[in-house]
Image (cartoon, one colour):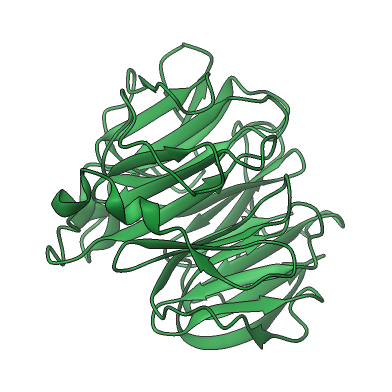
Length: 325
């Protein structure tokens, strides 16, 4: 597998844990260095607006594609997830201990504190640090500014229809160890989950969920992406368990594709199977699927995962999360 140039329209931003790396038109540059940088989002309405979250460092924001940055002055330090709404431009930050903050328009941050008042909240517990938990993923609907999903690691998948003012507790059929969530950008109501116990999807705006695990022999799912041209085609990475996915041993991981209600198919990335390192990030840039492995390698596919080309060789030491536009 040989490294080839990116298509000109592709932009990938990678959080490495200590920095933010931008890959634009084949050029790679470190655009932000902060300890604990582990989550990143691109504004769906204007890709030059980049948001990064840090454990211990809050939220950092750029309005010029990463050339300059400013502290977004979030009143919380440990950020695990960030998102920008395609519907109204609202910015969200999920934190540890579990709390969700929102910023709309020209206003300041407000904690969406009703999330912490859900009946299940006293049971939330992150296994490596059982005294706490965090909002691992926040997913605002691109079609409805009030519709919002929040995933607690470990606690459940929560839903709001009024922008986070009120919440309903863990949704039927969804997994409780939420890792990533996604909405389909063009088909209203279609939502997807990758979690510690498997995967699930919703066709009714996140109200009810259906398990989606047949055909996959690994159930610790992590990264997630949905084809913007087809709501019935989506991708997850999975490993046998958390120690393989995140530890020092071989990951024994795989990347899977699902089409409609057919069973999951394991994809061949050209790196041998099973994968020795976990795919930590998945995202679409137009019709191109980008896969970022934990060890820093980047791959891209223009044919829904049938063939892959290598985008590595850029000196990215590690990939924790990525976003693409």
